[in-house]
Image (cartoon, rainbow, N blue to C red; front, side, top):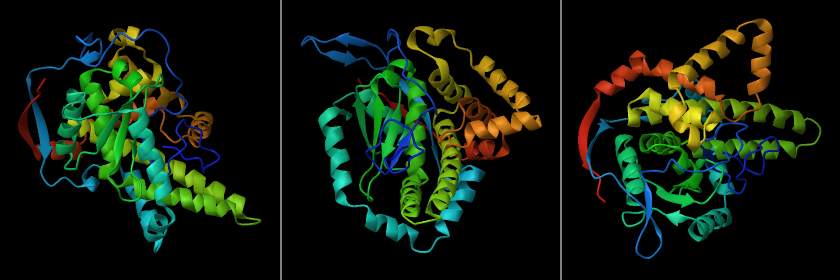
Amino acid sequence: MATASLPLFNLTAKSSPLCFRFHIAGYKPLSGSSCAKFGSSKKNRDGGIQISVYKAVSSSLSFRDLDADDFRHPLDKQNTLLLKAIPGLNEIGKALLGSISEQVMVLENIGTSVLVSENQLSELHHLMVQSAEALKIEAPDLYVRQSPVPNAYTLAINGKKPFVVVHTSLIELLTRKELQAVLAHELGHLKCDHGVWLTLANILTVGAYTIPGIGGMIAQNLEEQLFRWLRAAELTCDRAALLVVQDPKVVISVLMKLAGGCPSLADQLNVDAFLEQARSYDKASASPVGWYIRNAQTRQLSHPLPVLRAREIDEWSRSQDYKSLMKRAVSTNSLQNA
């Protein structure tokens, strides 16, 4: 979720003004052997690598008349309304975004990644289509990129068809259901139209830095507001992931693995223990000193701490709002073709 324009942003992809990442703030690349594959892999007759698929009928849910505000986090709603209240901001942002950056990102992905389709990594394609159908959104293009950093992000530029990029190391780290949670999280950004507001906030901040005198102070305040909105947006998209996979432990497992997992230890990780860790963090930060440290720890992060995200999604999964949404769900059967 980074751009080169914000000095306090310190994430890996800096070439696009609209970039959403399923990312843990401060997360470093995992090392070690890669043994937990998406499905399984084998060499075909030509010597290439082929990802095997599950030839089973799976049941999924689709939600009637699903609106983004049905699952949007309250903090996301609050901060989005503040951005929408600025007259003409949407039009200004679109006018300032030219076609050059769009062409750069499109060509970069076509040239350096693998485009997923019915005939290319078909199971990944199926998971994306299935997730998009559940959230009532058009499926974006999906690319797989070689990278040792487990990550996924969404790019939407100037109203054109967006696309999602998933790194190979993330596919190796997660189970099939966990990977679907990641794809649904990225779709949540598109469903909630987060791209428009992230870009506009970036433009505002860059513009403020050019104002002599108080410009730096204004920009710093805008950055803090932007980070606050970004953290809330991530909580919203975790909810989108839960709506698709229908199991809070799957979403929490993704967060846990990104926080401290690797393929060789994946089968030893315990979601319940991670949730208990989240509760202990709440207790440790309940004192005045703990609250101050927690605030200082998170205020410059683009993503909430993984333990806080785990606690949030666990609580929402037991809420009346979530239960009401699930009552609106319609079960569908979809066949996964090899």
